[in-house]
Image 1 (cartoon, protein in one colour):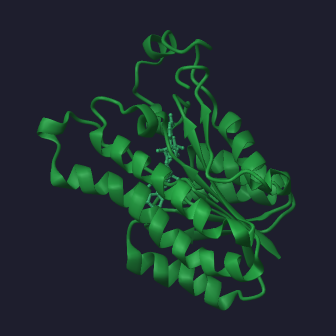
Image 2 (cartoon, rainbow, N blue to C red):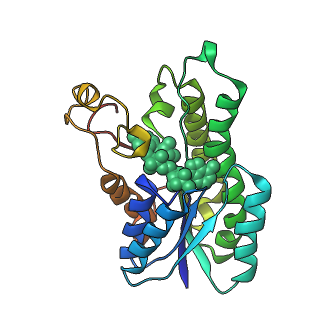
Length: 242
Ligand code: NAP
C-alpha cells in the first residue's frame, strides 16, 4: 500500500499533483486546512483514477494538529507506507515590510516553513526505515530572487530551499531524495486578482503557467527514475528567471 501525501491538496497546484500522482498509481492522502468542498472534489478526481484517497484536515503550521491527525493516521495505518511527501501548502500575505504586521510575517512562515518541519518529521522516520522516499518542497521564484512586497514569503521560501539542500545531504545514503520546485506565475486562486495581462508581458513565454505543468515536474522528482537527483531546485517559470 504505497501512499503519497500532498499538503494543500484541495486546490490549485496541490490538486493537480494529487491527480498526477494518482495517475502514477499512488494512493493519495489529501491534506487541506479548511476548504472541505474543494478537498472532496480533489478526492473524487483521485478516486476516478482508480486508486484510494483519503482526506486529512490539519493546519500544517500547527504542531498539535499535525501530530494528532497525521501522526494518528501513521500510527493507525502501519501497513501503509508514505513513499512520497509533497510539502505544497502555502499562503501569501503581501505588503511592504514597513507596514507588515507580526501576524502577516508569522502566518506565512508558519504555513511554508514550520509546516515543512512538522509534516516532514512525521513522515521521515518511516522513509528512513524503509530506505526509500521522495520529498518534494514547493518553493517559489520569490525564494530565489526575492520579490518586493513579499519579504515574508521570500524569506519562507528561501528558508525552505536551504532546508531542502541540508536535509537532502543528511538522508541521501538512505535513498530518500529531497528536491524543490520553484514556480513563477501559475494560474491558481493564489494568483487570482494579480494583473495577469501585465505580468504575462514580463514572461518570455508570455503567459502564466498551469498547475498541471507544475505537477509534471513533481511527478519526475517523485519517480523511481529520479533516483540520483537530490538537493535540487527546479525552476518552472516560462523563462522568467534562471
Ligand atoms: P492556492 O490555490 O491558494 O491553494 C493553497 C492550498 O494550500 C489549498 O489547498 C489550501 O487549503 C492549502 N493551505 C494553505 N494553508 C494551509 C495550512 N496552513 N495547512 C494546510 N493547508 C494549507 O495555492 P497554489 O497557487 O496552488 O500554491 C501552492 C504552493 O505553490 C504554495 O506553497 C505556493 O506558495 C506555491 N507557489 C505558487 C505559485 C503560483 O503562482 N500560484 C508560485 C510559486 C509558488 P484550503 O483549500 O483548505 O484553504
